[in-house]
Structure formats: structure tokens, C-alpha cells
Image 1 (tube, rainbow, N blue to C red):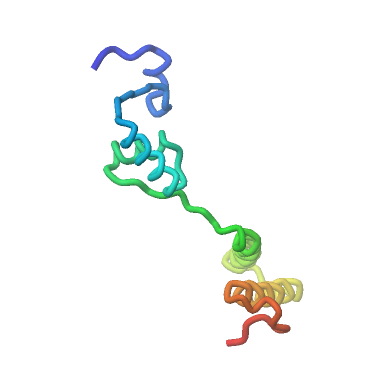
Image 2: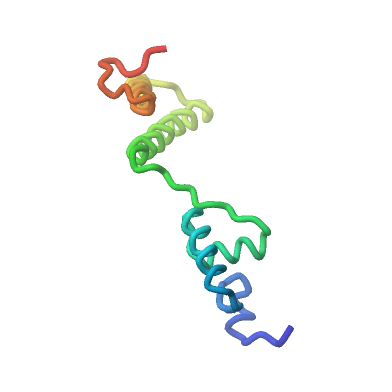
Length: 126
């Protein structure tokens, strides 16, 4: 391999180098379609295919689930804060019980929404 320019040698993990190849119009069309189906740019698709030998499609959260996904993250954070306090020898107070009750209510609503039961007055019942 040729000596690397200093800016590349200092940033070995940065994508500063270009590799080019010739393809047919049919190959280009196939690559564009496969990259699009995987939710990746052409560059990311070709890089993954060449380096790893397989392509990991981009994880896309369907629009209908984005709000629920965000809410689950908030609820998980609240549970984690209570767990940390308890694990450090703290106690669960009335406000924590209120937060946990609210979390249970939200989880029921999210479970109902996932199943298309948003209108159910009490969320999802087991």
C-alpha cells in the first residue's frame, strides 16, 4: 500500500479515502434498488457489502410507533431512576408509587395502541 497522506494517517478510522469501480447500467440500477430497500445510501450499502460481506439494513421505526417508542424510553428512564435509588439503599416513597402507577397506566395504553385498541377505556387488560 502507498504511504498515506498525513491527514489520513492521523485519522485512520475516518472515511477520507475513495474507492471507485466501473459498473454497468444494470448493475448500478440493482445497487440503487438494493440500497434503497435497505434504507441505506449507495455508499453505505456498497461499503457494508464489500467489507462485511453482508448488509445490515437500517432500522426504521414505523411512523405509527415513533410516539410510543419515545414514551417507552421516558418510562424506562423513570423506572431506572427508582431502581438506582433502591439499589443504593434508598426507599420508595409515595411519589415513587405514583410514578409507578402512571407508568403502568401508560404501558397499558401503549400495549393497547400496538394492538389497535386505542379507544379501550382502561388500556389493555390481561
